[in-house]
Amino acid sequence: MLQQFENNISARGAKVIWAETAEDALNEIGKICKEKNCKTLVKSKSMVTEEIHLNKYLQQQGIESIETDLGEYIQQLDDEPPYHIVTPAMHKSKEDIAKLFVEKLGTPAGLSPQQLTLVAREKLRKKYVEAEVGITGANFLIADTGSISVTENEGNGRLSSAFPKTHIVIAGIEKMIPSLKDLSLFLPLLATFGTGQQLTVYNTIISGPKQTNEVDGPEEMYVILLDNGRTTLLENPKTREALYCIRCGACLNACPVYKNIGGHSYETTYSGPIGSVITPHLKNLKEYKHLSYASSLCEGFKVKTPKGNFFYPDIIVCINNSERYYTNEPVLLVEILSETTRKFDLTDKFIQYQKIPTLQYYLCIEPEQQVIIFYFKTTSEEWMTETFTKDEMATCFCSVTSCVKKVDKPSKSTGTTTLSKTSGTTSTTNNTTTTTTQTPGNCGHTCRDGSTTCGGGSSSSSGTGY
Image 1 (spheres, rainbow, N blue to C red):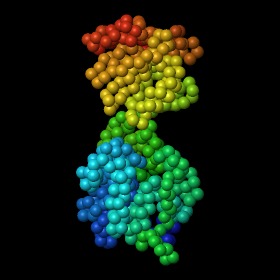
Image 2: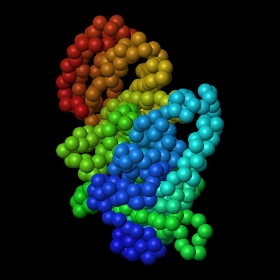
Image 3: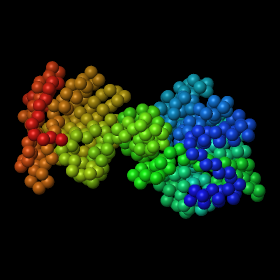
């Protein structure tokens, strides 16, 4: 397919360049820019250009490189790499961005998001006109027509490829698909899992530079096909599937590790689960092998409710994890609240959680206000709540540690599980019993039924818990 793609797009006037390494790709881009006497370059959002650190290279060459995706533009102004492979500036609030625009662009304070967007639009529009070279990535490379498919929501990719006289495309060799008709699957797939849309706003197919009968478009087009470790992934059947990734970012959104540590903590171009898989192979396996631990083994982070819905709490303590991909017998669930999830986590989701027979405790953490909302079920099956402030958090965690016990897996045929907070034990009928005793600590807090002082001290257990 790669050869077919090269033949077809070359027939329409584009020049195909094969780059084995990131350094090769940078050198080729440098040669083109030097030949075109490029002073200003505009580029659309492209993770491959982040992978090869293109902006840093162009800066060293004295070339002004402008990110035209709004999120990437914001990150460039703040001298930060993308936080997320789809939404680069998702960690910034509108106040953060307004402050950044005041500092970097001299805008008035207090502008609305709409006004900030118009400021960026006005400044970027000038750069499209000035730029000698435009660089885009490619969401897909189409073999049978020799075409580039770019899908986006802002139109900046289309402008970056059409306004400058020279258009450079850089894409990984794994982006190849057999036929134009395959886009009917991949474009909706990428839109749905990337941004929750049926289809993104701008979908462009480029099959070469401006033709003789066309009035607009670039005069020259170069396509750089990057390997940079991809054939290593391809030749191993165990790692080949990683190249199926279409960069939708859904795995990052679902991953509890990414959600808690953020994109920059990985210190790699590709963060989240997919980044943990491909980075050691695209770079240095020994240097990046630690990324294999940046995973929660998510099959243990999926809860099935009696209603049949699945949720992904941030932390689960469960009785029985016999199912491979989910648990339906959690004892404790923990959610870290955010502005967008708070209402759902405290209302509709909690209503469904309450239907889970084994669930005893539900902990909701408010990072912004530094407050913990602790729900617990009484012996009469009623749910009670208590709120802990920042200074009381240690007390709350002592209580949770004391109340939640490790238990053996109950027998599916005859075993039933009984939680006893008053005695400090957890037992199973017709099964092995695990008993945990707590040495009272000095926190002064009592367990929820008021009968036992919770332990900040040592603990001992008998039986075979897990």
